[in-house]
Length: 149
Image (cartoon, rainbow, N blue to C red; front, side, top):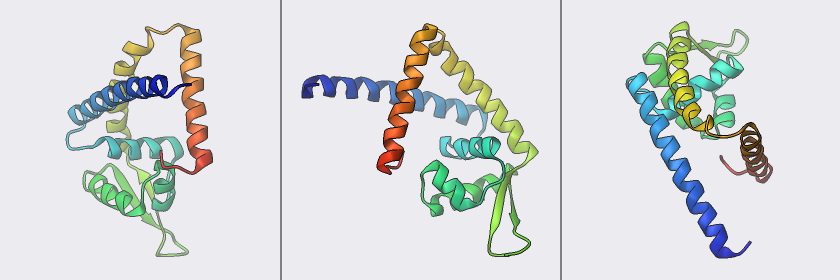
């Protein structure tokens, strides 16, 4: 692929990505006052994977531990997550999502699905499978290289 074609694809991808992230972030903020997109992603990870240690959350979300700690502090203050110390090692604790956290995550997730669904519905089933296969391939390349996604 020549450089000009590659540049055009990158620009188109960036345009779609920025549009989607901006609108999803706005939906989350409108639905969950004072919850950022990153905090929503943290709640989503806890819904998906259950109680996790902060280091596990940081790894899965591809951020540093200090960023996780600040987000957890804010979410805990809102009553969306709970920290529990390990009975064997008091230095270690796990993070779990509270019932209120599950509730607000579900509200925001519904809004995200409605938003994304309006665009996904425009794709044929074959186009959707191709779209997802390409995204999964890009993610595998990112993971293989050890890049932060």
